[in-house]
Structures are given as structure tokens and as C-alpha cells.
Length: 419
Image (cartoon, rainbow, N blue to C red; front, side, top):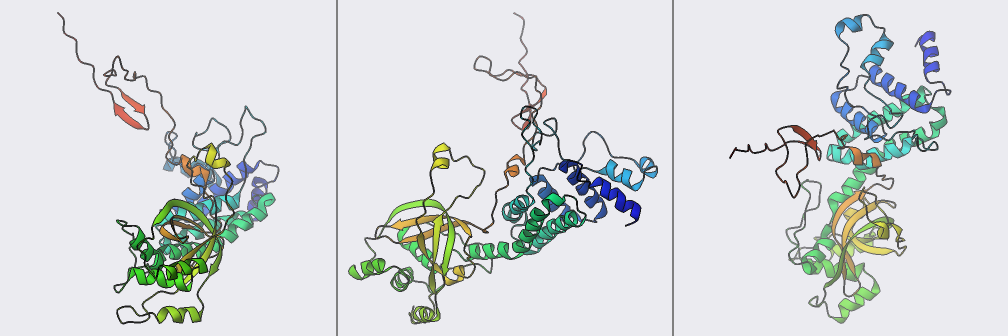
């Protein structure tokens, strides 16, 4: 970098300029100076979108031609070809938050580098990549590289610590996301599968199609797996119940089934002595067929997903009561305190509980990005076509209109005949 370029960059990123102008210039300069392959561009655009940056292509201004570019400097070419924009007011695209509301002078941007990074990495990235670890590493690297660029060029020193926190999240994502996915693949485990087969007739468990995931063992006896786990790992009260009924599960039934959002607070993996006890149980004359079981202690939590739960649910305080679930050791290997699970749990009539189905396993720093709700939003367009009504259901001409997000053709009116 020459002294002239350094001085120009110092002026561009001057603290006297508003933040949205500096970050917009930074994104444009970063994109022009980095050779980003198409796959990485897709991840980078999605990350910027969640942060409120418009990266859509220019539709009506056109791109500069070769003759125009020949007479431009490098800086002028960057400005002419830039597509990234931070909308300043409500006059911009409606799908992006505007930092200045003329009706509310106190409104403004909430700058949160760590929050945007957490939302992109924990919520959006797994769906974009299908938990392909290589693609996830590429996307994490793109975000990490951009954040380091912002920090290195001193774009917004007032948010330096927030940027460092976002970089730390990128480093954690390389470990925590595969770990959460690994736990998801190991569910339901032998104990929960046994309970579902015994007490949920007609339920067909879903095993994720991967060689690393859980599979139902060929030599598997659900009653043996369930009773062994309850006797060796379950509470004393539950064990006494099985002893009282002499192991007869005929009267055991599910009294409540519901979807729950839980946060892991403690993981208790089986020790070597307990593992030996499980391996000593024979199934079809073979030992070592039962998976060792431990426990995970969880508490209710709130997992944001964009759905409106209603005022009653929003104002209902979360219970602080701890819930203990029996889980295979292979699942507990991946679980960590702080992880969040969305699952379907069943309570039995003698007090025990089991996990029938796991829908999500999320990192401890999971964050739902609200901007994702606007991903498919399109600005409404004027439509002069009359809407159908009860009196005239066939109204409408042969004009192309915009209605409900789709372009539709109006049905032609029938020609009236003279008497």
C-alpha cells in the first residue's frame, strides 16, 4: 500500500463519517480486492443479507461498458460496479431495515457483529450446506476473513471488541457445529428406540442416512434394553417400580407426549464399571450388544424460530425444574452443557421419561437472525385489475397483475351478445 492509498483509506474510514457509510465502503473495497469464488460469494452474500446489507444485482441502472471502464480509475471502477448497499431510509428496499425513521428520530441501527455471525453460522449455514463439513469450513473462512479485514483496516474501531467476539465465534463454529451434528446423528440411541418401540405403537423412527449415524442393531431386544437401562442408571424410584411389577411392562403407558425445547446443563457419561455391567448382559447368547447408558440433565429454554407463539406463550415464565433423560454414551460423547435441543418427549405413568424424537441439536451460542424472515419478501406492485367479488367472481381483464407474490393472468370477460 502506497502512502497515498493509506491516506485515502484513512479518510474513507474516518470516525467522523457515519458507520453505515464506512461499512458500505469497506464491503465494496473488500469484494473488489478479494478473488472470491462463486461458492464463497453465495455464502458471503447470505451473511451480508442477514446483516441488513443489500447485495442484489442492479436491475435498471445497467453495468458500465468496456468503453466506460477504459476512462475510469480503479476507484471509479469499484464504485461503478459495486452492488452492496446499506439503505439509509425507508425509501430503500422494504426487505431491509432502515436505520433512520423520520417518524422516530431516536431510531437507529443496532450494530452487532457477533450477533450476525452467530445467526449466520448457527441457523443459516447448516441449511445452506446440508452439514457438509467442507462447505461449512469454506463459509466460516469467508466470514472470518472479512471480519479480520474490517479489524485490520480499522474500519470501525468503536466496535473492535464486538468484531473480535465474532471472530471467536467463527473459531468455535469449526468445532461446535460438527459436534452438534454428531449428537443429532446418534439419536435416538438404543434406550430411546427401545422405549419408542414398546410404548409408541405405530411410530416409525427416522434414522438419518449416513454411515456415521445410529442404526438399529440386528440383535436387539427392546424390553431388555429398556429394563437394563432403568435398573442400572434410572432413579431408585423407577427401579423399585420395575422390581415391584417383576419386570412386567404390560401396564406401562405414555401419559403425556409433547414437543420441548431444552438446554443441557450437565452430562454424566457412564464410567468403566457401569460399562462392564452393560456389556455383561447377554442378548441371544452374545455379550457386549447393549450400548452403555448415562444421563443428561436439562432445563426448559426458549429457541427462537420466527414463529409467533402468541402473547400467552410469550409471557409464560420458563420452568427452572431440571429434567433427567437417559441417553446412550455415544450421544453423551457429543453433548456439551449449553447445547439446546428441540425434541419430542414422552412421560410414562410410573414417572420415567424418554425422548421419542429429536428435531434439532443446536450450539450453545445459537441465535435466530430476524432478517431471515424477509428473505423471500418482494415489494408489492400496483395492480389495476379489479379483485373478484361475491357479486362478480369472474371480474378481471387480460392484464398481467401482481397478486400475492405471483404474477397471474386475469380471466377474460365473456363477450356480451346483442339481443
